[in-house]
Length: 285
Image (tube, one colour):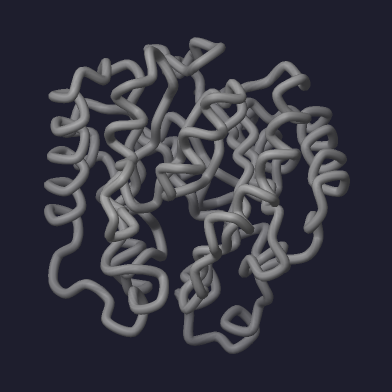
């Protein structure tokens, strides 16, 4: 199985590591660490040395409660970095939900659009829609994620009931809709959206029953890295008080379990350690 993207066909017969690079001052885990294009480029170069398969760059924080970023500010942050990173020889994904940003980065040659809104967002004017941008492109890759409500409200009013069939239904219909617009199946990956409007128990339900999501017949991209649920799983204060940067061990376990349950791509902050962990898993297989 291969993921068709703008410049690459990514072989998914072995699990792939997507490295997170946030050009933001306020992301939940690494806000401010790579806030300039030069800093972010150095981070991308480091992740390549660590064995990353795909770089995922983003300019807007979508942590719970995050405020939206203006279109102009997002373009100012992300375009210079995308121009530079495209020369590094690895697939470049851009984490955005704004159709205008999608169009701009695809015009530069970006390989993948990674959208937390699954191409549903619009600015009210309906001048340009994300699904139109993706459908008009001949071969870019796309990842459609499940999110309940929006970043400002998703953890205030999380989902109710059994989330697995709800997430499965949403992802299936989102993929089929895009396929109906002429987007080839090989271009589409799906993401259950760990932490996006789900409780701790619901997130772990998605992990425990992740194989059920394979019923969509599309590959899965899963992002557990440094998520708060990894610190909220226990009544032990020593675990609950872990900062995002201290969640390496549970992040690695979650990544390995996600791959064991069928994930084709894991989206992570800690690339070197995740690559090493997955090599152990592959050796054991």
